[in-house]
Image (cartoon, rainbow, N blue to C red; front, side, top):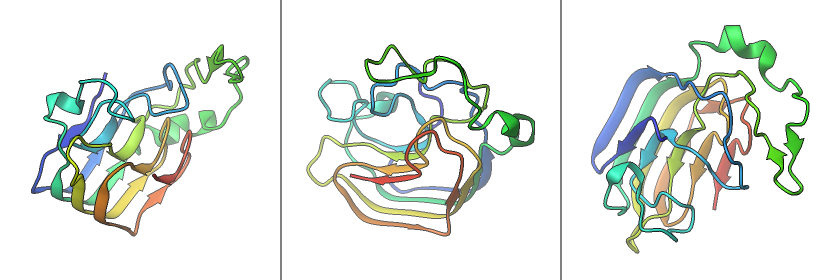
Length: 170
């Protein structure tokens, strides 16, 4: 289930806090496996191999999106911080995907902080701006900009305790 905001074009998200409640990174396949607090429109899969788009969108990239002065996954952090990075027996059998982070870690947070997915149109997502965004934990990536992203600025951000990449650009 994707829980968060799927942002269309000409959208500003400013001066807010958002708390995710996922405690597991489900069915980890080496790719993203869940929604972000903030996503632009695009494909629901990494490579657009299915006809499904995120949030019921048209899958075409968003333009002129601003995310500013945002705090993610901070509400429960003091209660959960002892669980961050704690070993969980049998949770790292990733060679054959028997149990690759398949057991709950108890840390309440989003899968991803900010996700710009691959889009169906050739122009992609353009004019993206993220400023002063802080996240205390994520089950997967902090910020992931993927496929056909042009004119993006990410500044004054802090992402810690990510389950995968802090920042990914591909």
